[in-house]
Image (cartoon, rainbow, N blue to C red; front, side, top):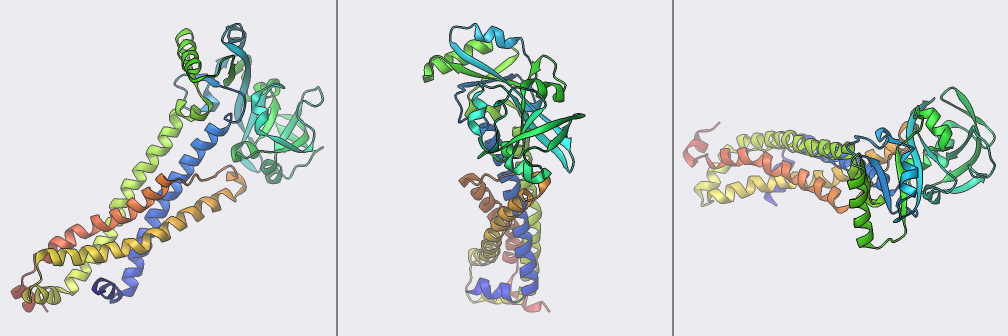
Length: 368
């Protein structure tokens, strides 16, 4: 194949270009996978429980900043369409060596507890009392804690009474506290961050009707099905928008790298291109040749970049500080990586192709 042979003429330059494409693709894949993974984890926090709706503060940027008055619970329980309401406090603090440690304040009857499985010790509410904490398996490993140890949280020493596992890394890397302890730690006196609502009638029409009625009666809240909870917060849209910006930057910067390689190749083969046109090559055949070389670079660099991006996500998740990170690798993530890789190839071939078709046989023969 002529395009392959041309690229092998300058192997180091071609290798550097392939590496540039791979790095650009890997960054886009990693950012997109992490952003989508975080959104998926937040949606999964309450999806497997009995909750039909989650109530949050409207326009809150983050689940931790979704403050609701605890007094709202009594009003909600008095409504005919609601069978049960349980509060949740989601917060974050610092526990050395972890800069960010997530905790969940919950109640004995909360659907949230259906997300976990106690594997050692006892459950949070097995014995009455305060200053008790259950740690996720990842959190226990990160902090070096076992059942019976103490954990300093907010100036208090809490006893680790149990360890649990959860399929959601965000939960598994955190801690469970009683609602009162979580409110004190988060500084939320008489406040919660969300409420889990179980309806008496859970069919689709009843669910939509309950959403509309709750939001109409309480303008300050947003009612969302558990599987769509992340959509209530701007933070997750911002993360995906950031990934989009990096995608555009990667195409532009990577395109320049590919363009440099293709342009140098065109300059070095000026005589060859002119001779090919003299013996009958059309302009389209010249363009196709330059494009083929650029796409060949993208064909090699793109899968390498996708593999590197997946590796970056897994590497980040292996660190203590980011053990809650889990990539979500759906078709969109991989298609985005492919689009970036081949977008670099196409963008990078435009000017070199235009330069190549401008070479005349006479100019080529004069070229030294």
